[in-house]
Image (tube, rainbow, N blue to C red; front, side):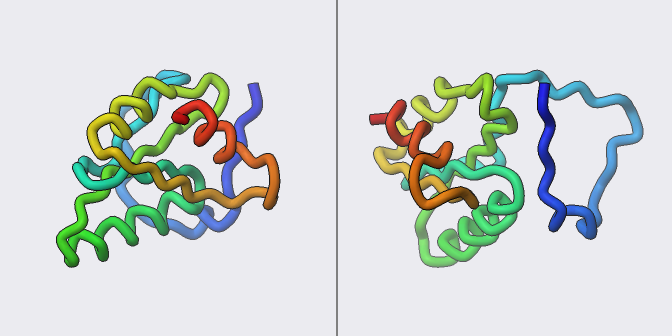
Length: 110
């Protein structure tokens, strides 16, 4: 197993669970419910995705934000259900210009 974290998160502050919290592998987290567009993002870019969803909400656009949490295994079913509901998909991530993991998600949704 390989765990990767973005170094830009090292300075973040927030709530920390006081009890042990087990996050299952291969289960995505719907960070924000929405009905107009599905936005899939992870790592540092997830922070920007949530900020964008807040701004779009002010304009009446309801964004569902999904954090896959793991890329292998990928919880594609959660993404499929969301896209079936919203009819639109946006993928935001930091990767190479060609052949990034976002392309894999887009291919599986199409």
